[in-house]
Image (cartoon, rainbow, N blue to C red; front, side, top):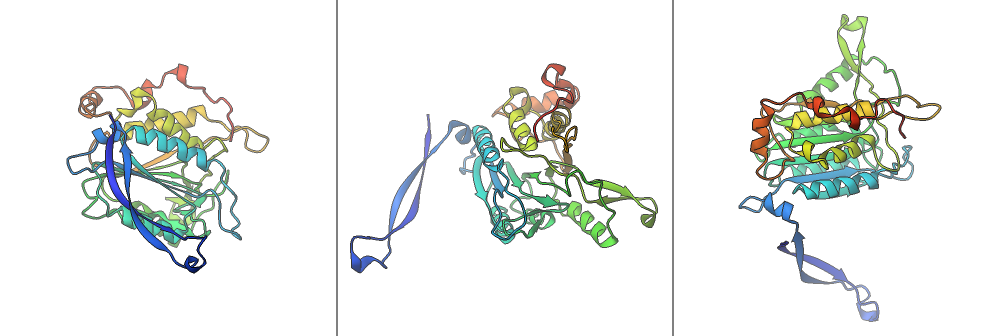
Length: 328
């Protein structure tokens, strides 16, 4: 049975048929009833808190910004909203925000109550260390991550999925100077404890004489997308819609996500034909968590994880189209 949640919303309207009221706005309060699906209700605690997901995507950029449209965003948001809602997450969708609006959104979200897990998806054009807002300005991931280093989120699981390029598409990368190198280390150090960040693609490691042969993070690889949705986020949804995957421990699920993208996707076309995509996981988890497990099955999954095989071993050959071309 569906539960009910009541709240009040303020409506503004103008009586266009009365000339004396053309500039008069009246405010009324209307009681709003929101249906709560059984999955969300079952994952709420006694305080009414539940797991939350925030989807932030840019499909179109402001006039004058020289960044192309991203037609697959709507399909990704629809798939994510449907998949996560079924798993009990309260999902909020935000599109075409400026960089400042992105910062403000996550600052607010980091102060909101959450049951066990907060999940954020950022989907836009990007470069190493950040994603672009609709205004064409870079929203730095390190600044977003630091918002969640607080008492409110201290004991919660925090998951970020970043669907964005980390550099020019198919670029071999250019060695960066020491200032950029420090910025990259700043990104990693800014990730709070018990946080996992999954990037759609990897950075590029350069080995240069100026660093004594040590690896230096450079401009990374491009992430593939398509009007039907991005390879990374659509694969994530597909995995969670399969029973055997949603009860996996988080890092094992992400390992399976990397495996599925790496071995079932291959770009087509004269220029991009044969190119691949490999997600990258950055984690500061200190414990095993099962954020997508069905109620009551997380403890059973934890016990099974101790004696089970590797994450990729359960991906059978019948479900993998090895190196088969796909759309980009």
